Length: 153
Image 1 (cartoon, rainbow, N blue to C red):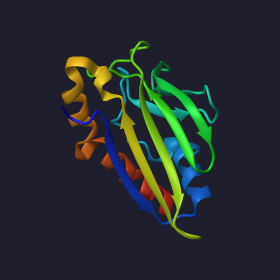
Image 2 (cartoon, helix red, strand yellow):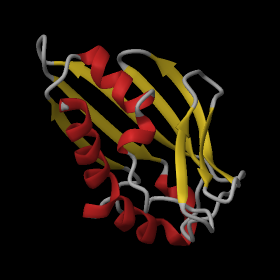
Image 3 (cartoon, rainbow, N blue to C red):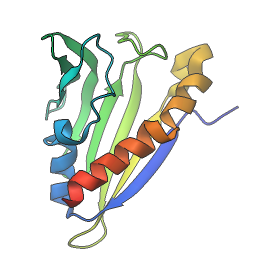
Image 4 (cartoon, rainbow, N blue to C red):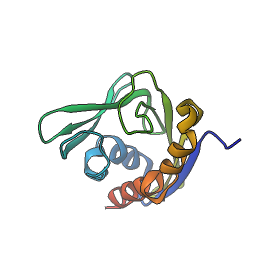
């Protein structure tokens, strides 16, 4: 049985408060435009900064597509998001996997960011397909690299 999680980490050249702010408040600035589920082009990626907040996209046609919600909001050390996008890249309100992001200070100007996308067994028969996508270079590794570049700027 494969582990039902994908884990990635990156060390960013930024203090912990800035790293958390760039990841959350600056989310739209580093999230790739091709990582979307809507029919139109991505206009804005939104992460509402509060427990219970939404995590979603606004597309150029004005439509909104939910991705999930904020399960835990603990600045500047921890964020947990509900991922509610299925293996066919459609929002599924019944599917909930968790993406936990931890921010660990490694000194005044360095922060290690640890991401775990867990509960992938909830994808059922599509678990391995989903895990492969999240574990690919275009998955969480590439997303964390885009974030790291924005945090260092």
